[in-house]
Image (cartoon, rainbow, N blue to C red; front, side):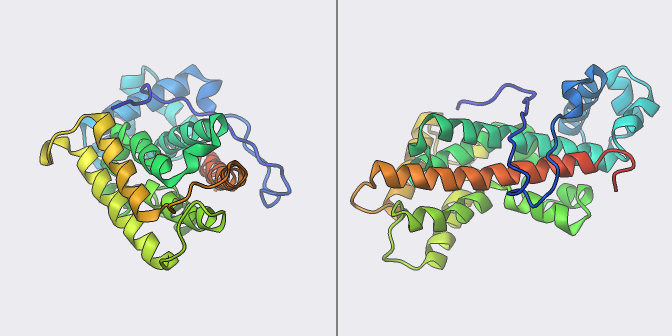
Length: 265
């Protein structure tokens, strides 16, 4: 299966201030300007993959990054803020991928292409595979604030798939002979099921990456898409609306990352 290089590098997708609710946009991530911050993030990621996050200490992260303990606290107020920021960066990386592909070809928002994209870009990250589940105790440990929990909840592939479904339906990319709640429920079941199988290939019949994504595409196509293909205009308009939703989630997560810096809460 195709995956992104590790560690991922995120970029900033800007929204006009008036459309972002008047919140000043975040222009840079600290690791873009600080080699020490980048090393700290890399060290935290490796330690988190090797050990339970609850057992990893700031001292261990600092030692692995080759910096003093106090240096870590210059960038992150707490260990939880550091790991929450790391998780947000992983999410930003796969949202970048989705937006890039939509920009290259609006037809990526067709359900049969969007569903494999959402699954592929998340299962490619070991960190996300371990900690994505909203019921995971590690995620609850890291994210205490209700607003932050909501930001992460909106950024799961399952949630994003359900959120864009009304947009696709409005533009004729999804059939309308079934109720929207029933379609959202069915899509949720498909995304969770395929995500579980792709993250644990040894637990099911073996298919290579392309074949498994093809099976997901076929399933979603039969489940959601109308018999007649939509017009290019409908696809383009729907893609713009979907891209806007993804960009807003991107901005929310950048603000969450910024809030983890000392003195910002």
